[in-house]
Length: 474
Image (cartoon, rainbow, N blue to C red; front, side, top):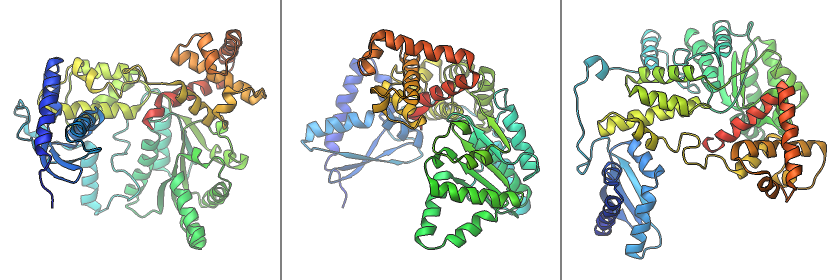
């Protein structure tokens, strides 16, 4: 049976923390974020109530839970505590008073555009959402711009005429640029306009492997093959996962051929150009690139502004134009981070009841905005991403292996480390096995000159840099 054996200690911890925050001029921070209501405890687990999912995420990500746990351990002598947070969806008794203002009825009752559209279709056809597709991923909720106009137009054309001109489609680019959004928009469009009368599958390459492995284990390969080789639409996410997996590639190859004969629509996504995938059979590379290979690039400033405003329209919310500008200028590489930032700002406004200023946004989004903490990229991250992308090891990159492939990979790592970390040449020499600074300078210049003369190599370096910057958000 649960009880409140630690309630007195909990109250003392919060009291001490409040005093500490006050003495550091952070009383407002304490009043906003330490809204936890003690409910019960059992052994070394304490259950508390918090007013929203947004609050729960912020309390955890900002390290407040760890502060409380550390003090609890010191006060009680208990070696470890766990804190479980239950969302109440209502303001707690100790919450700071919120400013309330009447909202127009149409805003109060507003629903996301995609949701309204889905409901209208469902009312007319009684069509249930496809279980493998996210309803939010539609062409209506996608914001095209100069960075992705071709991808948007080709995807729309494929959705309207599946299996015809734009088939297959390969969408590639860095994390969070809308590849999955466009792919699933194609699926949702076809599914709804065919009134569900279509054999469609949307799956990640990893889950495809898991299902294939299970079919081998359970001796149901015939059923597996019949399922995938008789589809009208196949959407596979993250085909870079296929690298080095020979049996899986064999199955994908035969599935591709079977679906081609049926004129089935196929769409694939990848985190880089197909010719940069290592350990992928040439016959598969040929098939993946036999249709339309489309590069999704990071959005321009104007496009980022449009994305933010579109997201706010869908949510039926408004935020300070200066905050919109701040987000658009500081989050440049990842649409997913743009959307997450908007949700954080809107969540804060709804919870606290006051407009978010740029100063508040800077604190609220400091872990999202690249470089805000000064530790967005590390040498370890650079080496790991490059080793993975070039199908080698960190030991080889830093070691004495002088093969042409390893040497160029090492030079790439040196160039990118110099660009992102601003290390001096002697510092880089120490990082790369104690090499002389003149050797490091030569390696840097080698890559810099190749970038100027080889557009495809320039694109490759930019793609690796994007992957490094997004590594911690994967």
